[in-house]
Length: 363
Image (cartoon, helix red, strand yellow):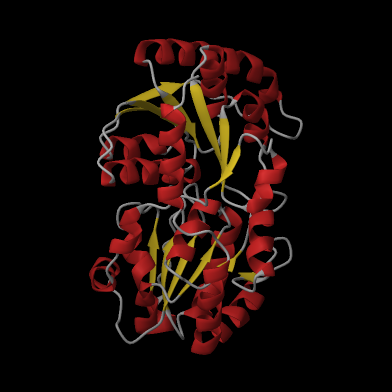
């Protein structure tokens, strides 16, 4: 069996596909893999560590606002499409799997032209532009939420839930204590702005840190190039050592998860899936005017998260909310409990069963 996995630009479109590869290996299903991703995305280092051969293609992202870069999109797409044709013809995959992102579009369309079986996965609550473009050309669509089945053709859409990487369950609180120099008697606040960081969220946290370190210790994953050095020992003494800023985490993120009593994060579905699987209490600050807002609203409707609007929240408001949560274990436990009713479980097994049966079917 030969499988092309395609996704990139951010970790969000990468994690579910890695989870699928892991599940196939767990079930001892033999396959040769090839990853098709972006030329400059963050995903290549991750894929290399998974021992998956990697091919980069030109990726075109259509901006939904006026930008001179949009004039280049047709040309970039054509280059990526021809590159995809060449890759598919040479590799001869039995199936092409995508979890969304613009780099997947030329790959899926090339697969359609070459009559290859293709499956796109709809992670988010709201359908993104890339999946809207790809859906008519895909063989099947898998979906995280039941709502998404209605967003696509019912004859080609299967509800599976969102696959989750198995290593997230291997995190160690003790290991986190060593890695981040944490204190065992303090609650731990984990802050993540996504794989590419979040400047606005980082600024809010930076303003809130002097108050937050009075009651907790902080692991702040800022995004590459956005590391914040916050040290003012003259004013805050030993409490300055309660703030730990890291630009980027992937392998050791599982240990940060294990240590976290509360997480402040965006609302990308891969992150939400992993934290939900671990039953980690969350305060969400989704990217405004983005499909993340729909993800966050759905979780909020289940009383499973605390939702804040980036456009209106202040550092003082964030401090008040976080202090209230960290000081009230019952509130955290209630959020953790409610996460149990948000997402479909057994997604890895359901997805693998679906694609293996699809591969066996005649074209």
